[in-house]
Length: 606
Image 1 (cartoon, helix red, strand yellow):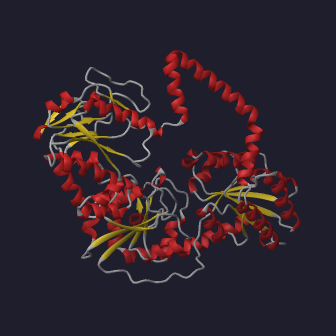
Image 2: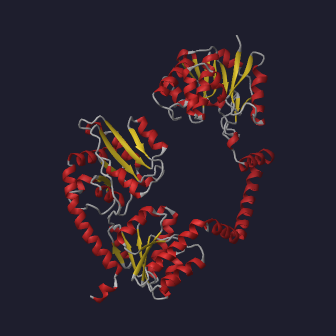
Image 3: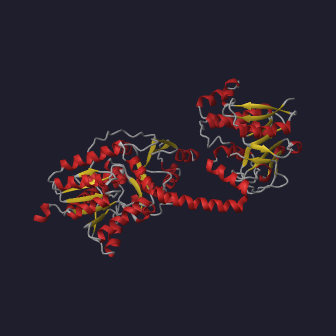
């Protein structure tokens, strides 16, 4: 019976030279007993199985590769070898020792980049083939679920992931220790080479950068000690060149930012300043910052979108426009590049300069936010900024202690677009999780998602829970799929009107983040009569009855979040009634604070 070396390629007619070199090491060692059988996704056309047609229709390359790897061993037996694996020692003794084997990799996983089965339709190959079909038919088309190491772990239940030595499992399956097939790191540096080592592993060879290849070559030629000195010398030369070329780099950065979109925004800002001729004040906000912009527009009638000012020419144009139109006061809502220089120039010309900062100290981990806050603080100390406003109440006393003139402002919501009222489905509980980025730790999205999975007892006769996520990421969708919750949503940020429309279609919305100042989302949610659960990091609802229904004290505990959700859902009518009174008081007080902060001519004449 013919035995095969199975080898998968992206393009059969274009195998890279390095991959060919590695492949030759296997052919030379295993021939004439084994024949080479090259596979690609094109082979799905010739596989007479219904599952092959389904897999082909997905157009998901990784999924197709996994299926072909399983199918090849299931159908023919033999040994599957991934590319860029160089055989450096005879492997036939392992084939005689076991009728089925794989290896443990550096992460302690069973890694199928080398997989041997003496016969076709072996126990392991059959189990994997059936599992693939079963999971695929359930709609699990994501590589997270149909990933071979994960599937192997689920099937080989007697495998101990903590043990990196060779393990002999049931059904005559051997998983060899990591020194057999994975003794090298991706760049070829030895980690655990022993007498057992059979393969030099270059799995990541194709992904090494030119810099990585050069570094490896240098170490190979000169050795580690000399190479270390050469690398240090190179870093020194690099720093000198950066110092000498900094002016040119700054110019290139300017040219990159100075695109048509930026120029149009500056032009629009100048036109908006002219429209406010004779007004006592204007409030600048950067339209790239959605939340800040929405808050600014709601609070200040004379708001003007103005982004970064990247040249002295732009700064002077804006300064001259403000002076020529008789504007007496400028409020910087948020703070971005170029506004410092503008503030200094306006102050010299008698214009009152104030700031409204929407950040908190925890957000100063962001380099940009930290730099802008430092600028505002120093401008206030120099008397250029006459008043610093914050929407996080706790910062007021902090900066007062630093002898700063501070003011507290409340964010408000007064939506000027129509929201289409839709009848909620009676058979589902719809939960909104909005304005969250799964890679941003402050947004704490997975604690909220975890809490939702505990809500089965909260359904009250409804058949299912659906989570609407915006923006929806693959990792969040995978997380909910694993936990058995259906998701809806949009993969990217959407316009405010569309987002609030989606909020209105939910039974409850969640915004349980680690750090906030005065988040707009809870106010927007209640504006469309949908309760919103929040974290304990802002001044809303403090000291009111609403606090026990809407505020989670331990944002990192899904159980606490779930209990708050349950309590709110049980008392929705009461919560909405309490919020109506809160909203009226908040609006009146918010308008009073803004009026006082602006210090308009009417106020000064009273």
